[in-house]
Amino acid sequence: MAWQHRYTVLGILFAAWLLCYVDRMVMASAIPFIAREFQLSALQMGTVMSAFFVGYAVMQLPGGLLADRFGPRRIIVMALLSWSIFTACTGFATSLASLLLIRVLFGICEGAFPAAASKTIVTYFAEREVGRANGMMLMAVQLGALLAPSLVAVLVVTWGWRAAFYVLLLPGIVLALIVWRFPDTASSAQRRLSTQESPPNDSVVTNQERAVAPITRIVELLRTPAVRWCFATAFLSNMATWGLMNWLPTYLLEARGFSVAQMGTFMPLLFAGGASGYFLGGQIADRYFRDSRRIPVSCGLLLAAGLTFLAASADSGLTTIGYLTGAFLCLSAADSSIFTLPLVIVPRNTAGSAFGFVNTAAQCAGFLSPLLTGYLLDTSGSNFVLMLYCFVGCLALSAATATRIRQPRNS
Image: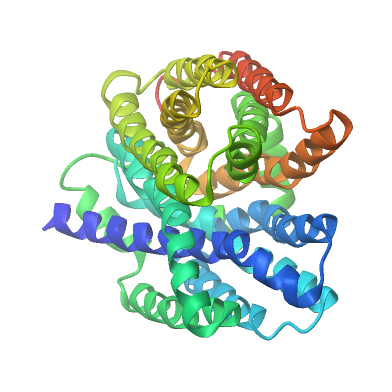
């Protein structure tokens, strides 16, 4: 019964993450049609895609603080409902200004979700299973990115780009109702985990712990060296991750001479590699590196750097796809542990805040990377090899910062 209950929770979180990324990535697929209707320039298109990250990054730490203070279930329900509403509102946009405002608000609403979801993982799963549970949940990140283009293509051809945003309101409402009707996460988890082993770090969150001022929690996080190094590692690795995800289609079309059909055939391989990496990374870290998760992080990032370097110098486009698929697998395996570390290096009652703090770094990178990469390509005459070498540098630096993460032995 305990196994079924905990993995039912994991399945719900997986579905919520899947919807989260489908809702997020729909814009990347719909933006050409939106640009045609609103007559947007390339810079304006990039601004629309980056606007989401403004709200999303700003809300990461507050989302974690709210999850620690009020419990994750309420925050997840509020996030699901509000971001689904603003997803649908995107279809009502009539100008660039309204589109930017909606995207920022959409980012704020969705930004409360990740820390609350990870807080739920800590609540329901013992420390020996946190990594694999987190990795399985985060597989949805890559699968959502894989599904969004196909979904948008069907909807745009059938009903137009606005319909792609309207239809995503209903799944959000349904998921919010499922989460709301579920038993309270904290009390249920403690009852079930008590039959197996104690939850990580500490047990029940008391009213006194809930009353800790947000500024106190933030100061505690900033004074924890391991959390700071996680922040640096997440920022550098995601500079490469988001650069690759946003610019790979353009790279394959312009630098490697792929047709649109070929790109549609081979891009899913990259996301499938990423999904496999999240799953394998969580399994390996929990089994062999529970007390030293920085090792799979560093190794994964170094392997991703090497494979990206080989992709930049490959002779053929198909060879490039092979190397980049491996790079996505290794990068996601490392990310699995990067986003597990904040959950196990601090007491459980501050896990949401720690995850939100580290994820802030990742989302700041998500905002900066597409813009800086675009500037690099403009000033270098579309030198895509130089772009990939810059990503190699980011990955190598992030591997170095990961070696500085010191995980408490009793976590």
